[in-house]
Length: 283
Image (cartoon, rainbow, N blue to C red; front, side):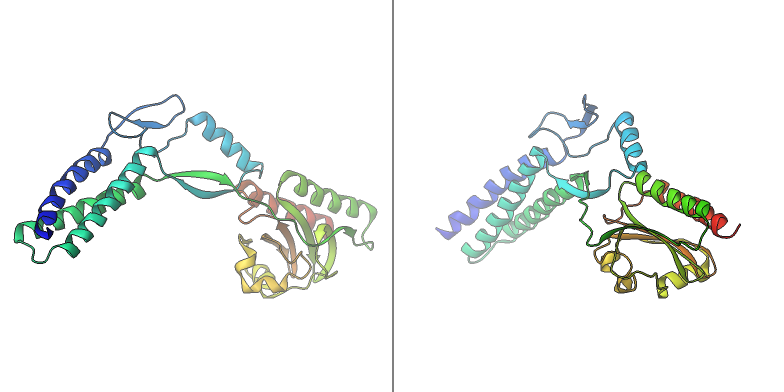
């Protein structure tokens, strides 16, 4: 009985492997109406490689520039690849069962088993190679803080208005920005948006390093950094931070409610705002 099973399994494997190989190597054909390459004759509905048309790509880029779309990867498997997963998994299971049921294996049967393992592995790896990676919007979090609108009253009325205008403009343009703080020569001169429990901006090692290097620091995922504890003046669950220095012990600090929230445009706006703040505070 075991020998018969051992002889029958390779033939069954051969059928599965042939079907799986046909599905694995279906070439992409013409592009469909939605901008995705579809598979030709074969199993399922098509390979999972997606190419978005230029119009949609441009629209997505414009959304990114407005700070409205942040992405993370979501893997989807097409119907064709689902067959490959089933065929590859079944082949490996049958090979394992064949090994357990057969006492002594002939050299020819061993070679067939090795071939089956190799082709089954190729089918499974093909699924990962074809995985359709799509953009999905990142979820924002509700920041734990208190809404503030504070400007140093020692400044002139015009300077106060300019600082408030600059902060509110950034809050409106960058959709995920929820808080803005300005420290000038170690003194807190502005707190706008949802702020943390500390009322004064105390320069910690991260902000000090940015000021000494005179270069922008972007903390795309603040919550995974041990240094997040120095930002007590921001909400405790602030997700991302930009530090834009503009002088000695002076910096513009911007917080967001999403991981990797800031786009290239947002990062480019920060130095412009910092120069405006510096010109206001150091006429």
